[in-house]
Image (cartoon, rainbow, N blue to C red; front, side, top):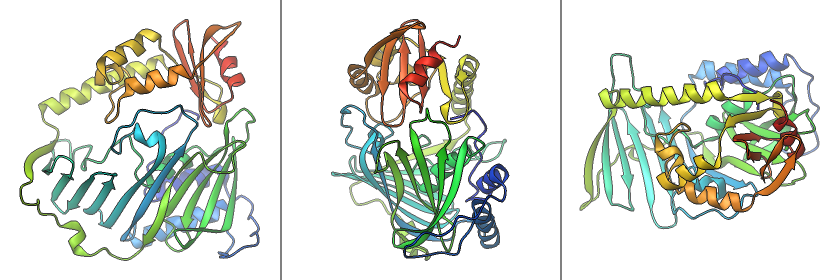
Length: 392
């Protein structure tokens, strides 16, 4: 994926501006046979409609539903975590229930086989409930002199919980390297949708196409699917399996700790410790950016960063990448060290004029860890990534 600044999906105002500029008034795609059939729209017209709808109605309409995320990336067997986490989302299927009443009324429930966690935001009050530990945490958001805290709600920042969050990232990459078309006969969660289909023009990309489904009435993104080349089923999918565009009942946003539950208090905001941690992470991010090199462009871009087996050893010993505060940042949930070991076992020794190393391939991503201390990653074929390894 090419470098660039991600636009924020103003649901979906900002993303519409990016796509509209990228594809202009592209040709209208003729409807294919099927039912339901929505009015024909070009990609530019479709996103212009989305801008008009969200602008006039003030953003996302009240809604509720069930979001299902499924990943079949072709990774080796991953260690079980027993909870929804960035690591667990790399394989299998997971559900999240969402209730949205307004910008200050939100509930997200993440059920697992044995327990459930809930985040409830209702005006100035927020609760986080974990049934596994029988703990209810009252969250207070502290606003510093610089304005509201960066993370006003404690949603996992590294996890895409809804199609809206993922759609913003995918739409930001539509450009001259991408063929764009519109399908107006699809259906998601029982609702007619437009599918915006993005297909890489580069043959070396492992991605066949990405489909983003926009509700035919509200233009809210309902589903994102990523297809690998040669696969009939999506390698990654996140979308609503059930959705209702009516205001959720008020009781969905109320919470009282159950009898016997442990009640804790936590303040989220910019205190001195938070500021120091944020500055430290920003410094690490700058270091990574300084060392980052990108070979190629568009869907064939390959990221190259200094990395070696000694870094992996440190990750194993710390239990999180770089000890949770290291150069590549920390992680939450799961055991990254166990994941590293599992993935390395599936690596294939390779060599060429560029040197030697270990190649790891999934349906959508190829990685090369070279013996001279480089990590190359891209959504490209092994041939393309070894070619990039020869670029100094």
